[in-house]
Image (cartoon, rainbow, N blue to C red; front, side, top):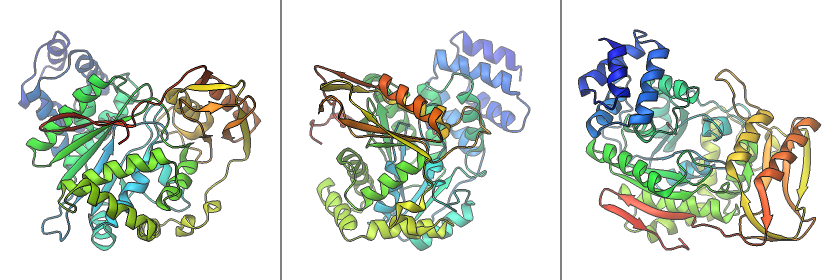
Length: 444
Ligand code: URA
């Protein structure tokens, strides 16, 4: 294959045949296509997009680059959810044990932070001892035993995605609908699921900021799922402000545990219930969303969901006492309260600024090999539309030292705008299925 000619063809708006995509991905994983040529091709895709058959071929080639989880003859249905990435998005930590405690197996395979967004694996690893590097065999055995495993992308699952994802992160090619679709769906379709729910984040803190592009992304992923035998539904959820109050790895684990007790922030619980209801209904574990919600509420009030989380933590080497005592989590050395500088209405809490500040504080990565400080981050107690008094405490910074506190305070001054008006946009705004797009009522 003459790679420069393929890059030029794509750059000029041409289409590459499915067989070419298969060869390209295979040769890239085998080291026969260098990163610089793949980067150029990704940039061409970023600007030119992919035709439907190219997207399907790229996704299949990425799945075929590795192995699959197999659940043949499994006694309960298998479902998972995937988020396109946001700030304060700790939903997976609640949802996996919650749905598992309602009788659906959840092989929650997650990623690390990407750009300004946090990653479930980094959050879980803030629990002392917690290991996310399960093999496919270990994951399968744990799912048989507990109904749930929370793991990273194993070397066997879509290795092509792992390499392409890292390359995109450093070449400005993340925010591309076909590349995000192929990346997410190659991992999820290798999980052997009976149903998949996608949380497509939309707004200034998401990779795709406007609703039309988010719907386009959801449709592309649903198309890939449905044509490959995996019923897929997407919800569009707000990412124009952080989800919940805590942003930062250990802080988010603590908030997720609060949520599993039923006492977490209401927006976090609402998004979790909305996605969980879709999962339960999709695989036939509940007949209606209302029935699914009732079962999830019961799993929380009975303590079953929290107990499942504790058992998963223990099975994966972590200290299960964390569910009783958040003091088990590593603690920031420097903490300071941030106060409103005037009376008024919160006009914005800018998630991208908060996400970037977490990376600057050491809670995310600038380079692939960076280690993450689990203790740093923010707790922000206001949302757009809230009334505040001058001097009222509205957030806290968690940092390693005084310099980190100063950096965090600057970020909060830039991220939290107080003015004369502000409003909260719908939390769960659209439901997208293979049949079409439904605009949801505001109070869902
Ligand atoms: N999550 C993924 O798994 N891949 C992307 O490309 C973006 C978000």
